Length: 135
Image (cartoon, rainbow, N blue to C red; front, side, top):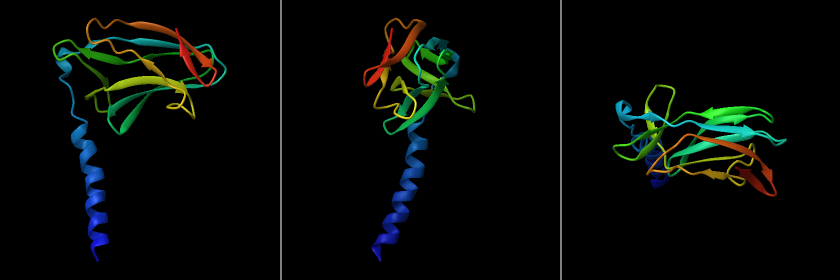
């Protein structure tokens, strides 16, 4: 008898908590800090960002031989990194990475999000052993 009630509460918590965790950053103080990723390997690359402890959003899929610019933003007032969602809201980032598509997290290469002096980056990435390597 208690199980349906617990299931309902758990379901509502799953739906409500991510909305609360995805608080936006003030767009007015954001500066663009693009990160250019070139895929010089033979497998597609997927770049993602963690916007909550349990939720990642896709930033770009990059085919072999192609490049993509990740639209990352930085708030120098709060030292917060952000990415824009489809509604034009700036969502704070906890971290960002790229990996081989299909095994992105297991093969990830973390993108350094410097909070002291953020700068645009150009990275050349390819599969290296069991992971992805970028320089």
